[in-house]
Length: 528
Image (cartoon, rainbow, N blue to C red; front, top):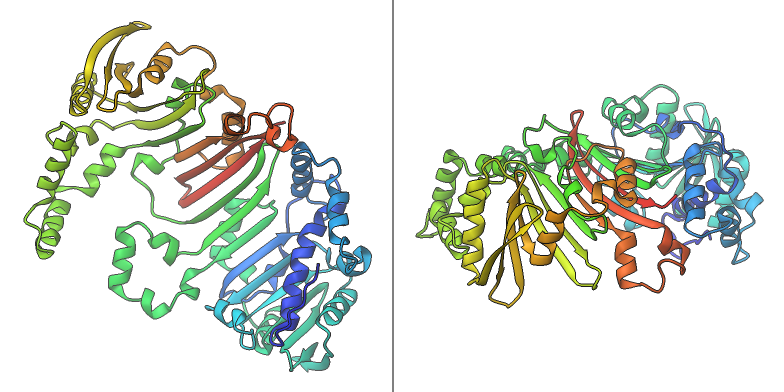
């Protein structure tokens, strides 16, 4: 379980990182049912200018690991605690009580400063970072590291604090209270000691770190903090032209501001979230909302994607000033066409005067859905909330005509006129506008949506459990119905086969701007 490296440099820190992996698994073996938040005590020893910090919950009383246990049991593992312990000791190289238990004191972490990843990969002699454990028994934990690395440690002192060194590896370690610190460079270890002695600010007191951690959650399996300005060449990011480009493409918050991330477990499933400071959003696509169109599609949808405000985003991206700038760029590239001419040509391919015609219709929510019907045939449709139904019908008619529609006919479905036609490929498609929603898709798919029979997606367990497990509001999102998808492709396994396939419900990926943070969140929901 603790693999040492044949490469001499960074042996000590390499072993420490291997122990981190072991401890993450070990933490959940003896978790009680007592609920508590996670106190990342190691962050109080990490320098405030850390570019990367990864903290892991090893709190034996954490409700997060209790929830994780329950989820694993639902996936078919009868005794996950014992299974993990058996796996740890399987090769005979690890004794649980001697090699893992000493490290289980609450949290384990890894940090670095600057752009030190390359230094670690190349041997770690100058790597500016360390691994920190909060231990049950620091002396035993240090002895495990020493034995696994196969090194002799020389006792030294810095600012009145004892530490140990192995210059040949290199490797440095210190016991600070109930924490064990292992570093690849002496300067990194001394920086931690300085923080412990109050001679340097800690990451735990860093305003960005505090804000991100407090907003994301105080209870998690793992937490990550990344300051890309510390990792990427600062001279590059300080270039005004580079910053302007980043701002124009909307990536400035991801590069110019720190990013926080958390992995959590709940009754709904396993979730993750990443967030970074961002300006207040104006576009509806990333503003908190609920999906109205999810209630218009079948509950057995395999895939559902929803966004909003496409017309607004299109107008902002292609404003009069933007079009002038794009025309200048196109001219500089030697193009004989303007942006309006490009849009007109693209629109004509679809039977429209310009792409603007269809884009300006999409003022509300727009969604894409696909599912399999009772005959195992794939059905699908695009749905869009529209302000003007007459304009929507006219545009849909043009789109249908552009595909060389044949056998055009209209039928009444649940009081709504549906236009059915065969496209150039011979497939039957349809469109309709009902209740302020334009629908375009397979004929059977549009008919099913208009009929509205049976349970809809917004009321299904897979969807509602996924939404509940996200930990954020919905913005622009994608939902995958894992149970239905696995049932379609692995029918023999679902519903009486592998418990894991039976238990998996849905996967959701979401993008939203909420409480001043740009967020990416996701969840894998597991049946209760």
